[in-house]
Image: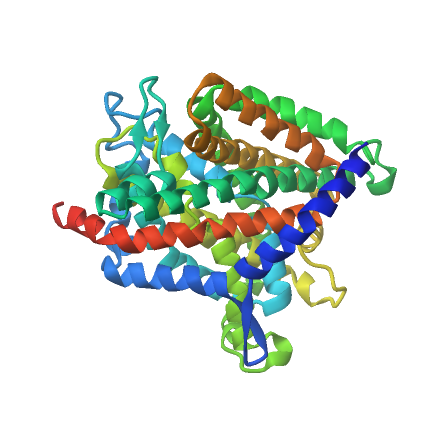
Length: 470
């Protein structure tokens, strides 16, 4: 049954997928390396806003920590969740398979130096995250039932509308909402469930696993778990993510630190490899340009700065000051990319598994690096990936729902029809070959950055005035 569904989706979506992928991930050649236009679009915005806002990522970092740890919390402020719950909800949507598999791909392509460029890109991405989250909170709408609708759909429609660009803002908001819904079904849902199932099968005996070819069963289990969580909305999601995100982050980072510590004598050599590779002009070992592009792409695709997704979660924070919510979001690229991704990179580099010439990459390379120290690690990795996948599923369900209700209204039927469809895709995704669907949905996720960043350029002057009043 699922094979027929797979073939039908492949037939109908492939032409659309190829078109959107070509537009969004189109690239140009620079000294033999292909640079995606979408990466330039996001990186330029990150650097521009860092200078425009006088490196708010440095001078307000202390305040970001204070907000995250509850200094500015007030239960009487409008919103649905605490600052920290909104932070972990947003983080659960970004910390995922990209931190485990994506980093390995970057190092396979660009060498150890990709890690340095990944960190530098995340540093500039902090300000881009601050801008979109602050605006998402500033222009949020609080409905009669107390629920919050915020993020790019609101500052594009309402913010640009207040500047006199009513039709243009409405068009950008609708375009963003459609892309977000498509991305939530694919990259934020089916891909997560599918990859979690694949790692579970790998850890339980590969083709000899009792779960082999039973993806639909695992998908149903995922759907039931996620369904119980998302039925309560952002309040329920926040309660889960405030416990799940720190737990899975601690387990993963602790495992990485253990490997680094038992190989501490190799750390100076590892750091030397990173800097040598990052500035090496020899293209045969990655080269400066290959290393730079690989690292930049990983950072951009990991922390989602500029995509416009995270502001939807942050908008629900109980706060009377949109800047505080924005300041807290500065921590997101730090945790997601500078800490978690760097931990993965250090483990892969310090164990040397990327140098064995086997051609493996992605989650298999990360698994091999850990397995060189812990022979039982594939099982732990399967658990970690499952937790990462579930956390991403529940957060992207919320992103998709907010955009769905923006287009179709906030009625009970509208809300539950989306959740039912979303959970259906979870079951389908666990047992399908998703290449075309994922190309399509990933393209839609990054297409969200096009209307989002256009809106940021228009509205950034208002945000700067707000900062000057502090």
